[in-house]
Amino acid sequence: MRILITNDDGINAPGLKVLEAIAEDLAGPDGEVWVVAPAFEQSGVGHCISYTHPMMVSQMGTRRFAAEGSPADCVLVGLHDVLKDTPPDLVLSGVNRGNNSAENALYSGTLGGAMEAALQGVRAIAMSQYLGPKNYDIENPFEASAQHGADVIRRILAAEPEEQTDYRLFYNVNFPPVPADEVAGIKLAPQGRRAGTGFSVEPHKSPSGRRFLWIKGGDQRAATAAGSDADVNLQGYISVTPMRADLTAHEALQQMDLS
Image (cartoon, rainbow, N blue to C red):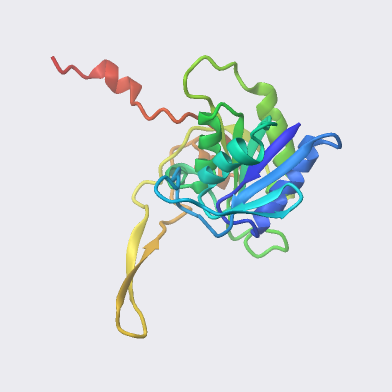
């Protein structure tokens, strides 16, 4: 198997090293793992692409490239430049430091990379590691994803339904905020919504007196609907959420009458 991996935390991020090990396990001794990742952190960029300016791509080692762009850019680089003659069988994005459950999915560069791969017709899975009191300060905060990641991907690939739509499925996987031996299992789960919380801004002044605004995240332990991704994550389960890039509210097409 030939696997292309990327992330949004940057090419030197510890979560990317975890993903490389997962991908090597999946690819096997006869497979290939290729890395095309952002040269610098790109958290929160979503599905952004560098449409209005060029980017520099540097080879950092064997099958390893850094691009001055977003995760979606990196996937485009991988598919249409680095691997243009030998396309990958699978694109993996992550492992993100922090969860991309619930509304976080909409901002996630990690999911942006997977979404772009799906739009290009390639199987794609995004992976993120929820952090909390039980795993934040342990020796390896990515322990749950490191030990369970390859198995989860194999299960997804084995269970994936046949595609019959224009927008290919991709998958959002979130590992719970617990050590590996406390993972309770795997659950398919819809995307949730943390009610009453979300991103906001917080003003600060620089030493020179200038006013700046920092983007501020919401409470990551706020309740979501029972059985949704963040809910099962906080119960110790790995969540798997099938997604599509189609943003149409299909139920509204049936409910609305504009005549």
